[in-house]
Length: 264
Ligand code: ADE
Image: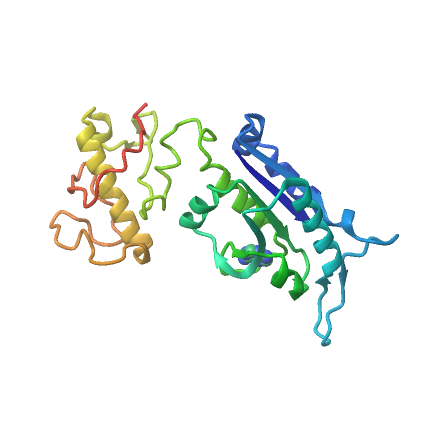
């Protein structure tokens, strides 16, 4: 069971994605708890002001420290200490699969989504334990990044995914992209499902999948393949960018992941 508290000035923006599909079912099963908090609830005064102009004359607005301190302190008192207080920001460390794996071991995470130019640095210095980016591009706020983080982490919690093997078979989980998938019909508009997938030969299927994964990773994300290219000496390997030949059985360079995908 993992608990997320998400603090935002735009609570309605995040509710729908939390209310559908795997995240909804995970909450219904009691495996994941997500509570969305409106930052304005902790803003003092009649106007519930949460932002102000920055010192130093720069443009944009800055989230004020008082509501965020009051909010984090109140939630910590209510729920006990957080494993991490995460601020979503494009200048944070980039979220990747190993980070998601590590965060999935936490008991409770507090996420702060800013929707303005920045947040007062004293919040980052005193309250935030980790700053996380979802990629090298700038979004309008931290709400979508917070949802990305929650989704990436929640699906790793045991029991959240129906098929116990499917989180392990995700792209990136062992550093390789995933193999292509096919379902019925076996022939569609003249395009055949690779014969090996219909052969019933599980060893050949695993070898085919592993070869496809390596080839896809080499063609699309060579940066993920640290060290010597495992296909470099394989005379049957397709050249970069070319799809691997159906049925080409390159010997797996690493143990098969055992990702329990069965043919239909
Ligand atoms: N807020 C705006 N852009 C972001 C990004 N790329 N990652 C995390 N938070 C953000």
